[in-house]
Length: 259
Image (cartoon, rainbow, N blue to C red; front, top):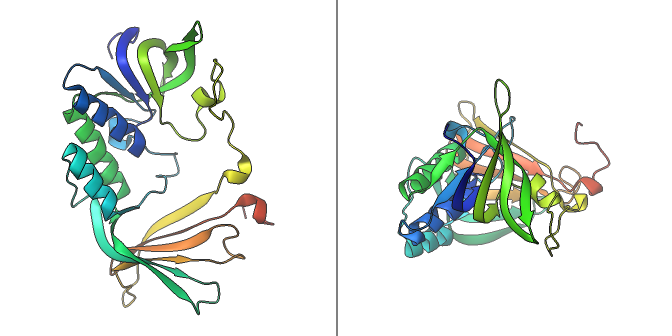
């Protein structure tokens, strides 16, 4: 790794969907005149991975979003990152007697492959990626953010570093230290209200022989008992492979998350 006491035009912290898109588009529109560094605590093979337990949600996208990106920066997505095309989302009432269709084409994603595609595109656009590093605090000078401190992460002794930048964009998620410890006056909300947080759990599963789902629509189930304040979902990846999960609003659940 080269000397990290350096200067950049733009530093993007967090290489998830928002981070890769922001870094790549900035470099692309900069036409080689804007230096962009993209940082992530994960290695390049897992850039943007949310936690050690797996990938964050974000496994479906409307076709209009894909067209929007193509029209503005020329990027076209397809297989393998776009795993299955659907034509609607069906929302079911708790008693399953009412089904409300929200029609419109979209795609179920292979989330890890989509992450790899986004990072590959950013690198092609001229972004430099630095993995296994973590931003720890912002540097301010006379009320202006001018850089950040960070450290390497992984096996061995973590090494501190300092980076100076004209612009720092934090896309590292709701638990970021940078926002919580913002050292200048700002309208940015430093702490996220816990009541606004919806814990989720999901599983990609292959169905047993003889069990199939219709692969042309995503399903959302409203159930105040099983998913209070949230919903359960079933996103088909194929006729015999699904993404299933649920999200809840913790304040509405009488049970702890461990239950």
